[in-house]
Length: 319
Image (cartoon, rainbow, N blue to C red; front, side):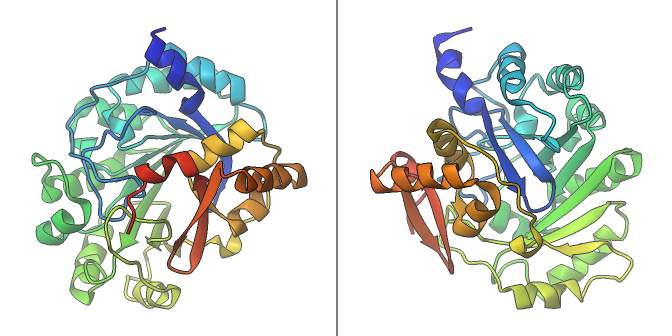
């Protein structure tokens, strides 16, 4: 293992976190050292970065598996493959999924992807092996797609949509579609109608409608829960529409060390509501100590206050 991998090994795994949609999730970051993505979404919580078609820095499969084995336990519902960027750009994805399958037991495997790499046959086949797949589809009109997701120059939304439809018909696991609404862009009746037409050809377990609820990369805003509900009503009644919300989250009080708290908040800034659902009493006391000594800080976005490491504020773009 290289010196870089030795340093990054402790950053590969984060959580577990109580996911609003997928249960108790143990995150696996396939790009722990920097943002590597084929999108530069307006709403991303990471600072803006040039899009890439492939990873320039990678972690060995063996290193990821070793880190995962140190944190995996029977209380985890899903092992979630994600990244500081797009996880399907990881060049050894198929090999990694096979390796995880040998150690995961009854725990499900999940990937959170922007869907763009489905056009790569290797990625397509790799995702078919997962228990759960979440595909993003924020817009289907080329102009709106480019404005919201700011894709790499080679990505065509019509091609992306066709692969999403094809994948949904072949995939045997639990497929989720996520649409994240940005005010003034994809929340028009025209774009919702186009999304509806496409989704009628997709076979998902659930379609999650969400909006911005973490500090975004660019000065854009989300929409209200009321508008999300109104949008949900515009979709065909045959579609399994769900409004993603913390309201229905169940408590899972876990114990965290100070290092685990810092790493978890680095990967996913949490609100007080998240912390109340996730942390046990001792972990909350440790968080309070980290807040008092300045290691952890808070940042307000709309009506929510998020906690994150003070040293990583610069990685989150200021508004």
